[in-house]
Length: 460
Image 1 (tube, helix red, strand yellow):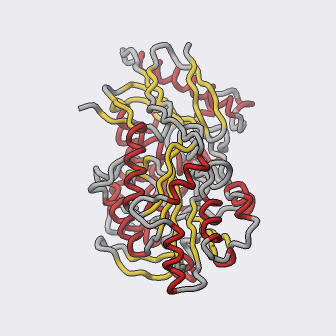
Image 2: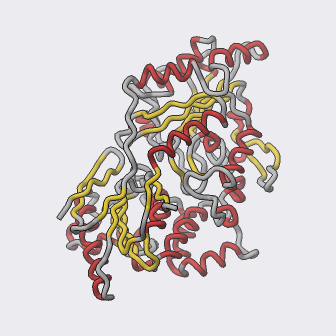
Image 3: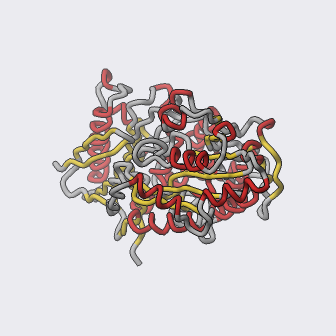
């Protein structure tokens, strides 16, 4: 029986799958040999923009003691903010070298609607040399009205509330990781502002059912994607003087650094991303096996892997997913839990009718549940097995699909051991294969090695 690797953040397991399992994988980009030098070179020669030192000098002509906002991602994205590949310390060093006082630099964590990071999480994220400086570090709070400023209304009707500290900064710098995104086409660039720094109610249109129902609201699509276009419009309203985005490989090594103009630098990063994440797809499979990857720290984030798997799934087929849900809440926020339970109880058709009803009051984080509903429009809920050893029996009661823990002996359930996830996956695939054989079919099986990161593209 062949073994296949599953990567979960900085940990990995190997899973035994039946003979004949096809491994669908994206190509592996070559990492940058000298990342520190590459970051410095990109900052000195940005895309579509003056270099950062020139921007600082220009700003200081109008504001001799400028305030700077540097926006960073939270811990759901493996952005290299420290170490040899770190992009944060070089930016801070450059700013200070150009005359900006460290006390005037504010690092804002673009949490969007996610929770605030703990002090320990911030320490694990940010380079020690930056922490040693007297810079200010804050987490965006989308529900704190006092920290938000009204900015106007977009052409699609979004009333924009934006982080006050960001808007009032003289110099605005965005950072982030560019990877495929199942709603906005790709992460990075404008998404550091929207949804990263907007108020909760500003997400109601951006993440509303009509936007997400668009066939263009999907991985690797920017043109005509309403989520991308809305986010970009909001980011332009708020302003951004400079961005620093990166692409990474499976080992979280730099494969590209893209700095400069909000649009031009981001488009170059997406172009680079497409070169290696697209996976040609020729057929559909009875059973698809995937994992939630680094991003799947909770069930909310694991939705990305579910949606990515849809093109490979035969209608009515089976999906098996392993997830390392190690967040403080392995499911998600109370709002997410509430809406998810509605999907679990009512099914995808009734759920979509409900949230499209004029009587429905928009609930933040319903968007991720809508993405899960796309999975269950493809396959029955009972054909989905969720293999997460870090979750609890109480939590599983509200989740759609089958609990992989129940395939294990009682003493091994909810163990928090990744090795048990490997056994869950194997047993779930065996059960799905047996169900296929009972219907008179010889099951075809696909393993999506890259989880949410490799994007399946149908040939022709």
